[in-house]
Image (cartoon, rainbow, N blue to C red):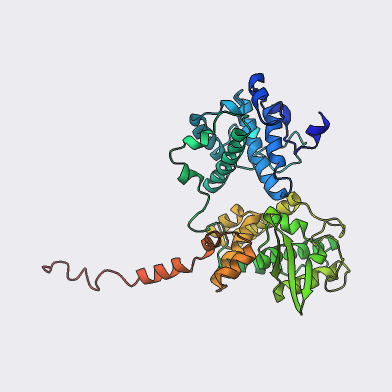
Length: 390
């Protein structure tokens, strides 16, 4: 591999990715690339300043390249009719043993591109990203056309906005979950058990009170919590490298103080304390995105098992088993909206560029609509009077 290729974001396993691009086409391109893999890496390099976006885009591009490789096709051979087959594949990657698996390091032979079938929203997002990839490749003259532009129902399929956010925990279920997280430990619990218990509370409390993305949680440092004019703020670099400051509520300050005390630190962070907020078992090493993801999923799974034992196979148990870390962000924003937080402040907490994105969390209109609809019903005693003439 050349020095130039090593500097580009890498797609793995590269040996499975098709690079079947005619030499004549390469000569006419406006980018210096010698394979589909290399061309996509150059596109990804445009997003090197936004690590979270880069990861998401690399994942979708890699899935497409692997799928094309299985069919012996290159990017330039993708046609409109192939998009339906690819979307069906995203909904049900088969054979599952080849495509689906638990989270593993990318260099592991057990690594797989999918954790499971993609939801409709995730499939739409995938198509949105790939449409952007092909628009760039057309501009670079690496491919001759963008097949996504031929989709008759493109607007419906590629519109990633939804009327309402549905992947969140309703308040009674969240209240139960937090009470479970708060449950006291048995007497004589070891130091590892106590640490894990404290860390779970910190992770879930942080996620619920400040609505971070998982990558933002993993990247948070102690000195990202700062005091200005007697008020605490959380500084966060979000999507697109945008810096924001989010108000820190009192409950979060309590959790932070308890967490730091358990780590043997002073109650509150000090300027220049550039150390990880969330840590591994040694109390020093920071958590990565994947490790944090697994810890949250494990907690949801453990909670589901307890709830099932207590109450049987109810819908709430299924919700907990389905929940992912991003559900915590949806839960936080939905509950803030239900508590009456104004849309402009909710949008600032969520760090959304568009208010209509934040408005997906406003379920109050649904509730009011339902209440007013209940004012309309069948006449009282309709059964008794049904034989009377109208």
